[in-house]
Image (spheres, rainbow, N blue to C red):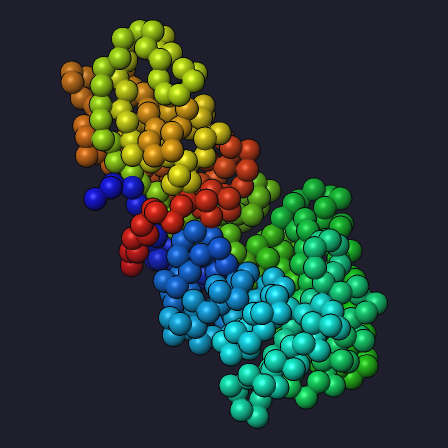
Amino acid sequence: MRGTRAVIHLDNLEHNIKEIKKVIGDKVLVCLPVKADAYGHGAVPVAKRAVECGVDFLAVATVDEGIELRAAGIEVPVLLFSIPDDAEMEALVRNNLTPFVSGESFILKLEKAAAVFSSAAGKAFPVHLKVETGMGRTGCRPEDALKLASLIVECPSLRLEGVATHFAVSDSADREDVLFTRKQTEIFSGVIEGLRSAGINPGIIHASSSGGVVFHPEAWFSMVRPGILAYGYPPSKDAGGKLDLKPVMELQSEVVFVKDCEKGTSISYGRTWTSPRDCKIATVCIGYADGIRRDLAPGLSVEIGGMSCPVRGRICMDQLMVEVPSDLPGNAGPSPGDTAVIFGPPPCLYSAADLAETAGTIPYEITCGIGPRVPRIYTA
């Protein structure tokens, strides 16, 4: 059996959820995004533990992701962040997935589908109105929100359960970004007041993802949607240290070969690295097909036996090579079968945030990028 695996520390997930709840208090609901296979951690096991920890809503990006949760027996409300196509309407309703709605045409199509396919006899199908306040992605214009909310209220098979927006730069402490988020909050609050003035109950009001949780308590409203915080990382460097977080994923692999290399030996494709001295090189059975991006080298180091071992040469599809420190006493050093830790929670030497910094990206992309052929092993 190949030695590469992602160990998912569900106890750390539980810890992070408790930390989030400690910050926001008991009156604010929590929606945990488990889209993209729970950011690479495994949607069903993560969702089940999250529900046990008192998470009120889950969120997915696709109808198929929602169906996976329902097939696993998960019954809490599941928000659908993205816009489904017409062919998915029946499955959306039958599986009781709560969509964001932003336009008249979609609302009317959903009304027809809910009237035919909803299994909740006598109950209107819940929807959340999405308002665009500055993200520039999806959502209705603020000036159209009242008209659309009124349409939803008039649809006998639909129920306005909530109103939402999404922040663009809430994870930044930069003054201009803070002001932009406050402006988004102002616009959104104005929409909510407009609905209430017209006699429409907006229901669950939500705007904040992880950045909003950290920096914008005024925008917590009825519910927050912290994703990366729950998986153990701040949403930005600005947000580091604001909560006591523990990374949930630990990516491990295995040394499969060790060799002595003479000075002048080139390593891997393209001969991009040549040893400037006699050295020891270990081959580890993980590569870019597993999610260890090719652009992580040079710069990436992995942990073997508590030692930091820099990657040498290009990362291959299924393997990478590292240099073992040369100042080891006697013949000490790794042997085939030894564990190589790519990233994980302390006391691991490196985290997904370290890899993200090396690659010039964010921890989200690192954990989401760990490929499906890497088995997930769940711990308590």
